[in-house]
Length: 304
Image (tube, rainbow, N blue to C red):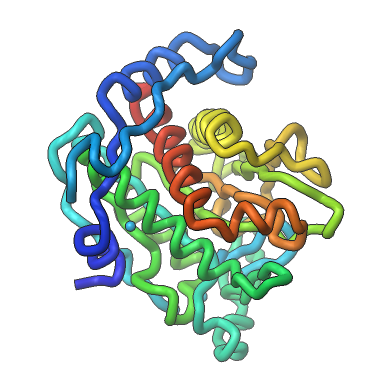
C-alpha cells in the first residue's frame, strides 16, 4: 500500500465536493468566455462540506528560480463513484525528500524541449526560514488534493509515492501524465522568491510547434480555473514580484514542454516571505488550499 493510500484511507475522513458545488463550477466555467474576468462573484460555489458532512473514506523543475528526478512510478488509485468518474488527474508534487543527498543524479541532463534542449533532472527546492522544506509542503498538499478528487470519483495518479525518494526527472514526470492520458495535470510547488515579494502564480505552457501547440489553449483554460478558485479560496494574494496578474506563460520548462496533456504549475506562495510562509506552514490553511485546488480542477474537468 502506498503512503498516499495510507494517508487517504486511514487517518481522517475525506472531503468531497458537493454535487451542487460542482454544478455551480460547471455553470461558471461555461458562462465566462476564456480569458475574460467573470462578473461579480466568479465562483459562487458553496463551501466544501466538513469531515462530518459528507462521505468518508492524499520539477523536476522549480520554475520560480530553480530548475529541477528517479522516484515515483505513477501510483494510481482506482476511481470511485462520483461526479468526476472517468476523469484522470495527474498530481505532480515538486522535488523530493532524497534529492539533496543525490546531487549526481539530480544534476544529470535530461531532455527538456525542442532543438535538443536539456536541463537538470531535478532540484532540491526551497524552504521557509523556519525550516519547512518545499518538497514536504508539495507532498502534503498533493495528498490532500488527491483525497478530495478521489472522493468525487476521479482517478488520481501521483508522480511519486512518498517524500523520501529521488526525483523523478522532469521528463519522467511529464511522461507519467502522458502515459496516464490525463484529462488534466498539475505540478504543485512553492516559490523561493525575494523576501519582500508575496503571492501565488500559475504557470502554463506557451505554444511550441510540434510540442505544446495542441495543449497550450486547454492548459490556459486550466490555469484560469485554478487561478480563480485558488485565489478566491485561500486568501493568498496574487504574486506581486513576477508574472502578469498571477499568470505566467513559459516555453522553457521541460515539465510543460514534454507534456501531451493539459498541464500547469501552481506556485502556491513564496516560502521566503514571512507572511506567505506562515500560511503555507499552517495545516488548516493547507486543507483550505487543497479544497480550492480541487475546485479549480473540477471546474476545468467539467467544462466538457
